[in-house]
Image (cartoon, rainbow, N blue to C red; front, side, top):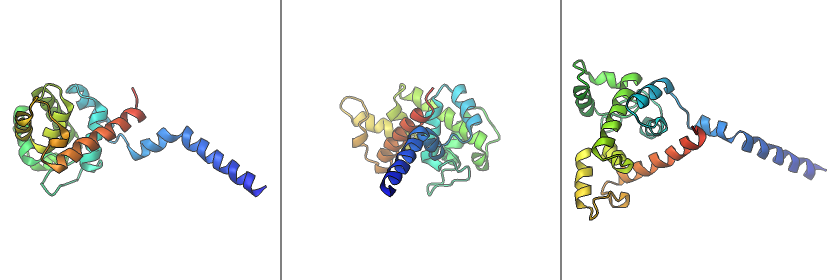
Amino acid sequence: MKKKIFKLLILFILILVVASHKKILGDLYPQKFKKEVLKYSRQYNIDENLVFSIIEVESDFNPNAKSHKNALGLMQITPETGRYIAGLLNEKDFTEEKLFNPEINIKYGCFYISKLYKTFDGDTDCMLAAYNGGEGNVRKWLKLANNNKLDIDNIPFVETKIYIKRVKFIYKIYNYIYEK
């Protein structure tokens, strides 16, 4: 009798997990700062799930995140890149502290992703590699490639290889959870 009750309990738990697995995954992979992400991903014509994936990998949704390389905020933008983006957006009042503001950080991050997509002809791997490892490095890697196509496994920066793979994996999860 106890064995039957135990089996029924296990079956009940499995049914609950299967029925609510997207809710559980949604708790693990949230859409924090959704208003800002939707606003700027639409403004700059990029997939919001990609933005959520990048934020997840970059800062785990911590607006006060600061990396060992001095990248700041949700999308981990360096002050140098922030100044560059502010200049492209004709914003004269840029300060490093503004990168801790989720609205500004997401705006700059989405703008920069859009710019990188244009620079690398819509190639997601190149865009992600440039976002993490720098535009100049990606140009060098493409020049070295025989077919002018980025081979993730031949990227000399281990961090960038892992970054691209993590973002793309988490992007698949976001697309599964929040399918449009």
